Length: 385
Image (cartoon, rainbow, N blue to C red; front, side):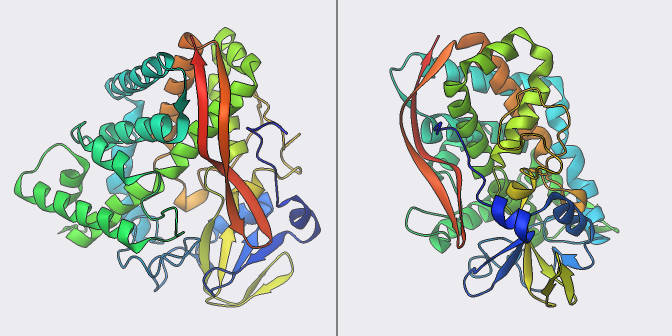
């Protein structure tokens, strides 16, 4: 099997039952596996709730024990969700602007140029994390030097090598954001913190806690997901140089290639919801106040929608994947992620002929009955100019 391959561990359960089950810190989760069921539940926010009383419970693994701040607008349901979304959405559409893209291009080119001078580069820490962190300074419109701090945090702000949920690491993020909010209150700037502090809903300024909720989501939601996407894509192109060559010769398929990579690799396996009333999924009874998860990774391999779902079809045309979520809570950072991937692919095809994988260590996610490869703990490669 190719090192870049991500097998589908959900296939049998998706075909036979349509759902899976896992225990998460003694708080069981029913996993919805079929695309139609995932999309249906994502639209039905009244029954499958993102808000709820317990902050952090919809995340899998649950974060109820490591944070008390509600991530906004992620953990807010309509109609309040639309109020928050209207404030932040224009800011997260800025990657469509030419000036924004020019700054991203400079970041990506520098990292790739440096990689080309080395006999080996470790992609997770030295390439993907660096690009993600530096690109985040553009998204937040904060000083470039801040990226060094974020790089030092590692690939995940809530997890460490020893623990799937690390409260000490989480507190580092929370303390950092608190200080940045206080700084923006004293000295407003043209950054996201200041934008949020100046914003109002129904004539009332956002509180510090609300601003903190947006910022936690921004840091946590687009970190390991972007890193996984970049790392997995590098591994794929290392083993499929013909795809890199095809994108170079047919730049018009670049957008479809990006969507296909994001579909296949599904950098976030699933996201939870809390059930507000007794219901059923795939004829399976689900009790009120229990948890379900919308399994994006499984839905993206549903053969009823995707032809040859376990293959990367680099110019796939029909591609209604759900890697960025679906309906009300679709990912705010999708525009930034797509723009960043386009720049990475464009730069790769212009500067790199082949990529050699020298060593690797898979990152396997343990979901009880399912073991899913989400990417790599380590990927050492050589770029050839």
